[in-house]
Amino acid sequence: MSRSIDYGNLMHDAMRRLIRQVLADVADHGLPGAHHFFISFDTGHPDVEIADWLSDRFPDDMTIVIQHWFDNLKVDDEGFAITLNFGNNPEPMYIPYDAIRTFVDPSVEFGLRFESQDETDDEPDPLPPDQPEDEDGAKDAEVVRLDQFRK
Image 1 (cartoon, rainbow, N blue to C red):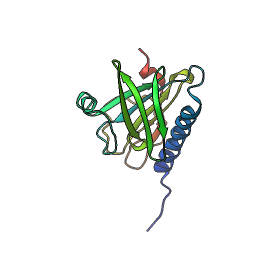
Image 2: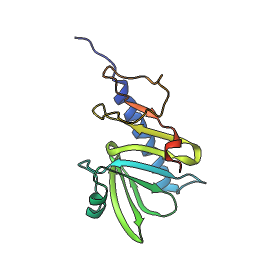
Image 3: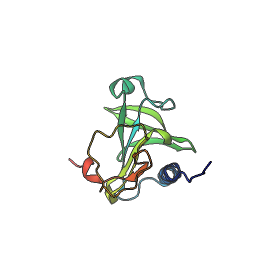
């Protein structure tokens, strides 16, 4: 039986540690300069904690923006808790790192995307075709282009 290195999961772990480190710094010191984040996540993940009205409105995924107003940012090894303002209604939420699909800081054109191997790839690939793929043809982890988030 041959053994192989699981680069996809290793990369996902490294990317989640990076997000944790960035959010922990923001929790301790606030957002520096023009930095802000768009974080999309799977609202159906079993460990996501959001208000019922938010999960009803966003049954599959949701994108939050951490920029002008946020409160109670708490970061732990599994995810982060934050309170965000939705139409003058502060809503606490908890997002595990495993639920994150994209993490983008448009101020410095930085982005990460997490994809599972069982997701269908119906939309065009935003990256060049020379991205490495695993043996099933699914991309495990990749940097995203910010053009898809611009209006």
